[in-house]
Amino acid sequence: MILHIPHSSDVIPENLRDQFVLSNDDLAAELVLMTDAFTDELFALPEATILRFPISRLLVDVERFPDDAEEPMSKVGMGMIYTLTASGKKLKRTLQPQETRSLVSLYETHHQALLKEVKNELEKYGKALIVDCHSFPSHPLPCDKNQSIPRPEFSIGTDSFHTPKALSQTTALNLKKMGYSVQINQPYEGTMVPMVFYRKDRRVASIMVEINRSLYMDEMAGAKTSAFDSTKKQIQSLLCSINQYQQQAQPDARGEWRAITQQSRAARR
Image 1 (cartoon, helix red, strand yellow):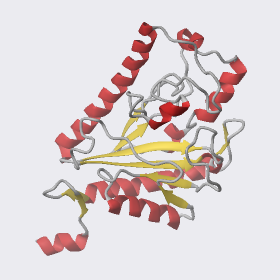
Image 2 (image 1 turned 90 degrees about the vertical axis):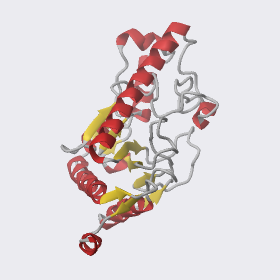
Image 3 (image 1 turned 180 degrees about the horizontal axis):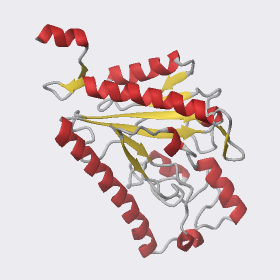
């Protein structure tokens, strides 16, 4: 299992700070708003491979399609390279070609690393599972397509080709058993899959797990609350159940994942 953590960093290297037109205070506020703070701590499992993007999404967002024509969020200035803030204000000056190439290189390096990990899983196990790990604000941002409230405590993102129904249903059920409200593909949808395999290879499964930030942090201050540790334990329990699904499920002749229960194993002996 690969834990993909793309938005947990608030790091902006000093030599890239001048790309932003915001004041220090405004940039700090935008980072609090847009960073999936502490998801690298919440989504942690010793037996899983963890791939974390080390710099802020405000510089380059590895979850976006590189072509703005294919990326819906580019319409609000949030394609691969953001040009606008969440409220639609100007975020960056016009970048020089070499500056853009440098950001694209960071994007491509990350995706090559993800591709390598997926290929390693396929070689070892004949299957690969990506858990795309995120958090989201308790109230919609101005840039959000979905403005409905109240928001759930967890959102499960799926892909019709790469997310086995049994996986999304089991994940949602386990969260509900913990007492959380859950929606699938609301308020955010989709999940990360390397383009090499996208809609081509069902052996590569993926599911996105998004947690409402109000469960574990003060959203205004960007700080952990007293509920952080207990929330982390719940997420670790969830990841264990997802990992167990991966270990039990096997791709069939079409490459589709099928969960193998103890009963079905016994029947095959």
